Image 1 (cartoon, rainbow, N blue to C red):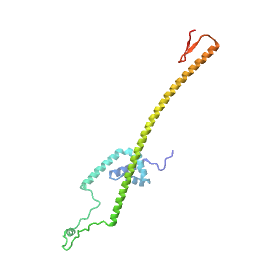
Image 2: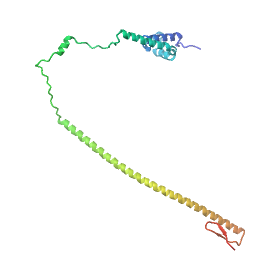
Image 3: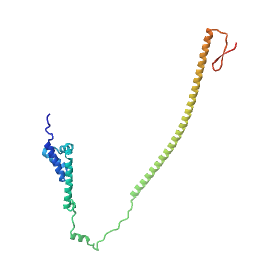
Image 4: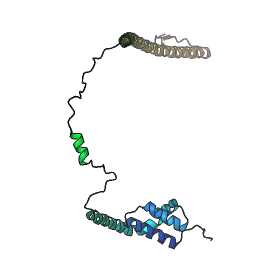
Length: 229
């Protein structure tokens, strides 16, 4: 099996781990460590970062935690040495004594400050525009009211139609029920008639085969009764 020419060796992984731990311990970022290792191994920082997160980091979890702890201690010591104050990126200039005295001098008596303001007067054009807006608003309001009334009337009409259709549906259902009952009755009558016809046919055949003087009478239910001789 051939090894890839760009495969990571144990020395490369060790260099990557040592560099990352050093940067973390000194307060730098892992990205800077990836760039440094990439320059040394002729690889991209993205490739170094992927190798660290996918393979190497799991082997140095304890060392990484220790490096982060050392970084906190280092930052705490540096903060005490600097008095616990962060240096501002921008410091505003401090005015001199002459500038302060010049700003505090009173104004001369001959300088008057005009504080009067002319009253605001709306022009005729602005008044016309305002009236046009008011008229347009009233027209829109009137149109909206008219549409609302139309919708209410349409809603009432639809409700009446729904009620009428509901009544018609109930009436049709009742009619269908009556027709079903009539159909059942007609079916029963038809079956009774068929039975009577079958009995009559059998009686005729019996008379033709064996003539007899015995007389029979059929009742309304289709039953035959023998008459006394």
